[in-house]
Amino acid sequence: MAFEWRTPEQLKELVKQDRPMQVFIMGMPRSGTMSLVTALKKLGYTPYDFVDRIILNHMPLWTSALRAKFLNQGHPWGRPEFDRVFKGFDCVLDVPCTFFPSELATAYPSALIILNKRSPTAWHASMSDTLFHVFAWPSWPLLSRLDPSFAGTWYEHCMLTWDIFCGNDYNAPACIKAYNDHYESVRRVVPKERLLEYEVKEGWEPLCRFLGKEVPGEEFPNVNDKGFFVEAHGKLWSYAVFRAVKNVMGIGVVSAGVAVAAWWLYRTRYGQSV
Image 1 (cartoon, rainbow, N blue to C red):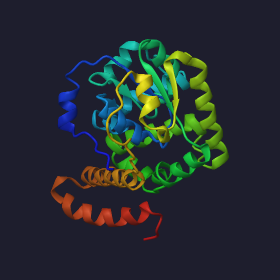
Image 2 (image 1 turned 60 degrees about the horizontal axis):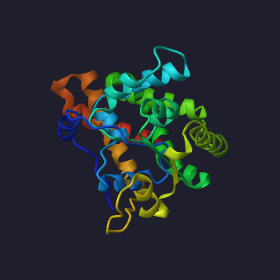
Image 3 (image 1 turned 180 degrees about the horizontal axis):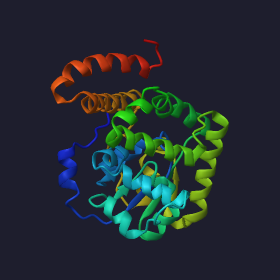
Image 4 (image 1 turned 90 degrees about the horizontal axis):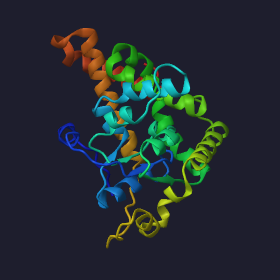
């Protein structure tokens, strides 16, 4: 089953609407998240995902939230700040939102929390094949300098997020310890009556019982999005290349410049010499 992101046009209309917050998914990405969010969509929820934050230009806002909480730089977020970014959505998932379990549970006392999980070893293997693999593309620092308003904000946000989580140490010992610490922190701050610890292999029954929903008459979604994930970030990278070349060379010579720059950056993206 494929996963589909919302278009900018769809998001433009969506954020005009008001929806009460109902569900926070507090597990780490690559813990069955895409299958779970697909299931929640089928149950009628409107999730706020990482790509929505990119399209809506929320990355700098969340970077500020992280700096305020973890680096004591700026004003800590409360209900007004969360309402600003969550408008139009009733379900929230993925980092860095998962780093605010106490704040979100307090700000939205009627919302339920799902702590999706998997084997920490399997989680790290999946992260190594996807997100950590993308971070290793060596052209990101250069693109960040050439395109500070897009690639720069994305890269800064990602590096800060994972520095907070594991010190940007993507080896198994550091990551698995951080993974286990995160889950323990959620368990400590979320009331048990509002918390469901859940693995997607459990299917519809425990999820629907917790949410008070009827079990759909279809199989639980099985979204294998490893290749899709890397492909999606490849498109993000290509867009950053286009913007970087335009910033450096100007609109009149963008086409030729993109062709040359894309060839070079494509090779450096995968660590190949020119």
